[in-house]
Length: 114
Length: 415
Image (tube, rainbow over all chains, first blue to last red; front, side, top):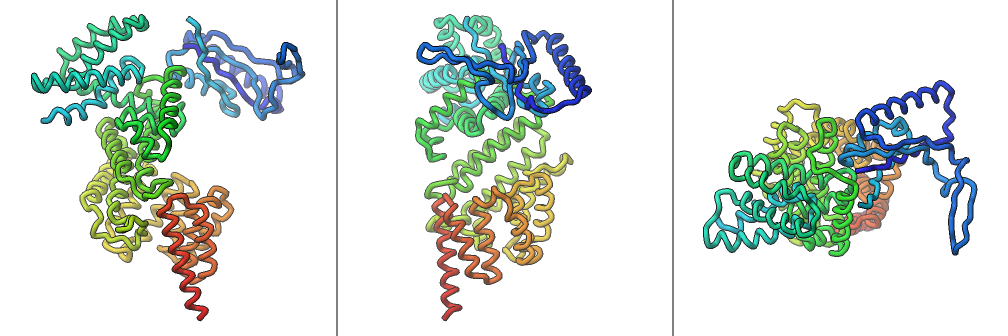
């Protein structure tokens, strides 16, 4: 079953250069683990929400606005798509994502169309 | 042995096996009911089979495979058929172990943390305890459709999110077991003090909680908290007959007729607690609570209660479970072991807790202590706040009575 692991954390946390590097290194370790376990399908960090553009179409008219669709305390910072046997397995990986220590990881099954 | 009893005993095991096999609660239920009907007819004619659960399972599985074949969904079910029917005819001693495994897997599925707690409770009562939807709805004073919806959503999440039918891996086992014990104790507590409604005790839910506890103790050996929880439930339930009077109203521990406490349950509870402690695992919250209940249960009268021991146990419990409720109960122990003034001082320390401000027991505890030091006006005030917050009708009646009694005393004084 494919799961999307949505990574939410506070993007406004000021990290020093060395702290940033440490986080990247941790993510590198995690990505390598899920790749070697054969569960990795995709995964990317996202640019900060200030780079986001929200699109809505209402009554046939398309409108763009600057920023994410909602202002929240934690923002979507990245994702992984993992192919796992069970929810427990996906949750196990989610707990290893570095941001899980101070943010939240939402684990959702991908709706497949056979 | 009569057929009905055999069927009742086998049903949860067979259901667990079918759910585990086909990963579909509804399919399992349908074929199970059909198999039960067939058993009823067949066994009356031909007598009981040697392995009733295996008989039911085989019959149910055949029908399930037929249904699935017709739906053209599960090809693996076809491969399963020949393999598993063999298990039951050749390896019949293992059958008992396999069923226990299935039951355990079912329990862990129903109590999976990815499900909302109320869904865990409803699913456990339906699939493991075999209550009907009406019984569950009645137990929680909810509508039938509310329970139905809860169950439908839970089963859907199990399927869509891929919640596994597995006994959790060693690493997750302790935490998952804690989750199961929470559900069991919730069920018991719903019976111990019904949260809303006219009756204080719904004995059935207490007995169901205890039955579940016994089942877990049989299925999972060597875990002291399971024994601790079972001991706690038995000791609390031993007072059932004394907790309500002939009118169904609440009777405080101090005023209970101890001669109607169930001594057998007390004995069993204490023995289980000894067994739990003998395992020499770090003591858990249930064991400490059971120990507190045991101290009460072993006192012949309120005056014989070893409050120093209880206070010491509460100090330990607060370390394990520093919730406001535990600290509130500790206040009572301090008041009894040391002095009412000491208790009131401890209570004042808790006055800043937001969770307690809206909790009726905090205010009724305050009222009770103030009453003891004859601060009648303050006591009435606290009881009135408590009355405004209490939801159970019997408890409301009790609080109203307390207020009346104290107000009578105030009038006496002012005369």
